[in-house]
Length: 269
Image 1 (cartoon, rainbow, N blue to C red):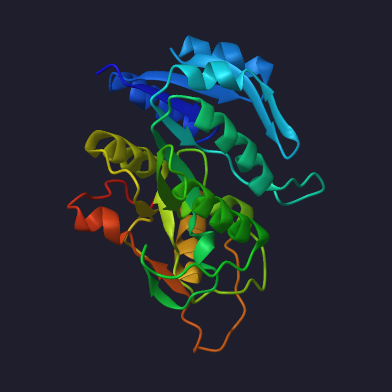
Image 2 (image 1 turned 180 degrees about the vertical axis):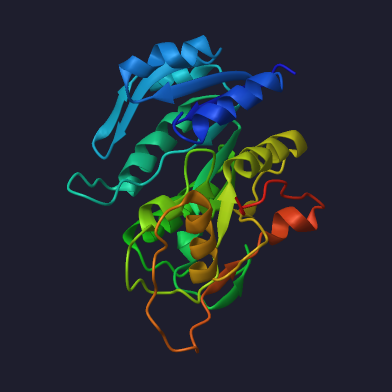
């Protein structure tokens, strides 16, 4: 297998994904926004480029990065919180311009289940998007921009909350009081299953599709986070009593599961 994969954003998901794809026999090019990390990537066998996306343009050798790859995986989170917020849509417009000039034929765009907003009950890839947050709204706009491109085919992955070996939402929720939505179901996925889902798309050539990436187990938040906090010896978060007519949303990974694929890594510690 000699296919070349480019990963834009070798962070918490992108770096272990790159390592796994190299094991699978792919040639992998990766980007980082920090020159300090170039050597770290190179030491893992990743051809590394320093690339910075902003709403004013792209700094770094984006042409070099895109010039030798067949498939591009875009794993760049919208930075829309805090003081230094930038338009994610504008960043992606600059990126699409560069992809058009390259030989990239397939794109995987990592999105989020935030695009479903405050939906109630079960939602699947066929459900309407009704984002309520700014990042959700910009992700929906970017998904449409990529899917409407004629020069390359884009597959969208909408991941739920990401957990992994050194990452779990209970660590930031620990000890917090009077939180909302305790009766709402969780929609989480483990890092290993994120990688496995991307590997499956590459292996089977599932282009031009949408996949939800959420593990099919949805206990209530207050129950799940209480148990996860106890296992770690942390103070559990507490939740407000709320009216029982609010069910919250259960995100179904319908497309992936109906193709007879499975998730393999439990979200229970």
